Length: 169
Image (cartoon, rainbow, N blue to C red; front, side, top):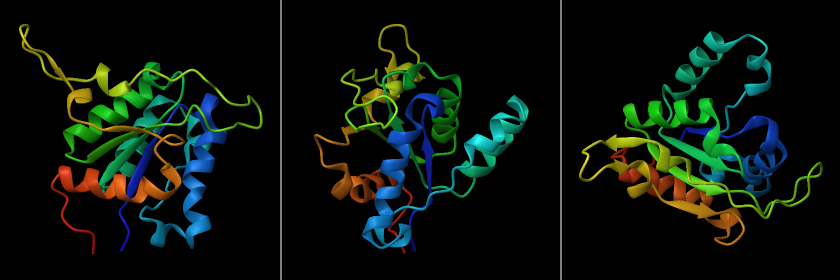
């Protein structure tokens, strides 16, 4: 049985890059064999408004074991991405980030701008003398530089283990 993964990303700017990452499992024999299950339906939801988006995010996170944040050049500033990260942390899901800026987009080409780490915006321990963010504990990889095609399944499994989500069945 594969891990249930929720993918968080900036839809408008990064959908083509995200599709390449999410579909990489298909070239390995399907999502079951590649270590994750895709269940994003973002495009239909945007037309229904904020309340529908929030309900959908919450329903998708329910039953997931890991949230993978696919980080483009503007991802860290997206309110829904930040909500998804906060909610994933509250639910005790595994978290991992993957920079996707170097993946070629048919519309925009390659982005050489590496986006800010969105985990650095989520404060989890707010002591004035020593604030902690999720960036202190959540690993972030680069799809191209760290060979995401071959390593994403392992990154997802490690995130699940760090969150105490047990061994994959």
